[in-house]
Amino acid sequence: MADTTYVAGFYTSIPTTDIPERLVRGLDRAGYNVQATEPNEPIDPSSSDEYEFKIPLDHSVFRVAYTTGEDRNPGEPAARLSSLNHNVNPKWSDDAETYQRRMDDVLQLICRLAMALEAESTPP
Image (cartoon, rainbow, N blue to C red; front, side):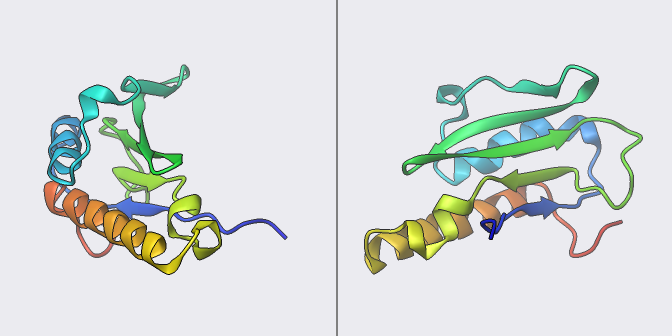
């Protein structure tokens, strides 16, 4: 049986040109120094308008991916947070206190990104 994959998608109608700056602002307000993370790099060489940050969280890495493409499918999120499996799954915690701290950090991060991106409750 495969592990569950956890992803948070952020739908927004802000201009796509504002998304990178807003993501950096949200990450900064959540306590992550984006300048110290792996470079902001293209996800796939064939897609010139999709990028990601790889950010350490505890003993793992999560990814913040986003698009700057104006022709994004309305059902596709402008940004997404993924690779959270080791952070939100209790089986990866040594104890309840560590798990609670990690969950608090992840929820704070999701909230900060949602506010920075002016996320909408449903796809536009």
